[in-house]
Length: 215
Image 1 (cartoon, helix red, strand yellow):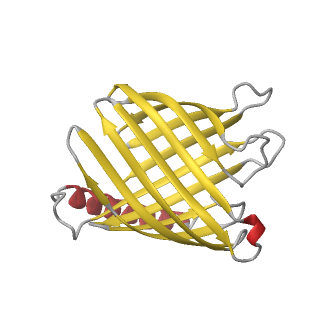
Image 2: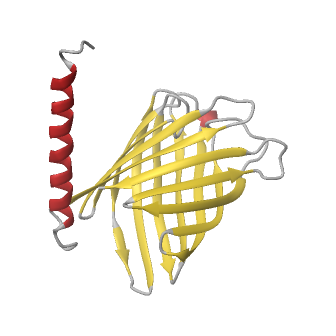
């Protein structure tokens, strides 16, 4: 990029950033009962896998009332993308719950369709979260697989949490069908950062660093 074009590009990026910020503030100002308001989230999980390829797994979601839309990359397989449609349910006060049945299509690595769900259960300072899917691989039925990610965490402070996690994945090879580990997370100005370590008793554990932003 030439030096003459750089200022123009910077101005455009600044204008776009200001527009997104104003739109986000406007959306936050609406009541939760307004089903016409969209909410968005962006997250990225960086995997450091021993003796295998390290990779980044990004996810983008969009919700409007009951409607849930989602896109993932590197979730079902390296270089694989997936798109999801779901329906949001939720309720409770002291014991709050959320459940989103989802249906997705996967291309790029494994290819197929997958029913699944995302859900959480919160009480006091404790939260249980889980997401799962079963991929019906239409290219090779023997590669059909059940994916799982779950967390149980406690928040001794509003901005800090720690707990345990488990995952079942087909993205990289592991001697364990279900990998278990620990998590530590912190929140700051709408950004959540969480570190995970799986297979602690292995000579070379798997590390995951995640960051999430809600708009």
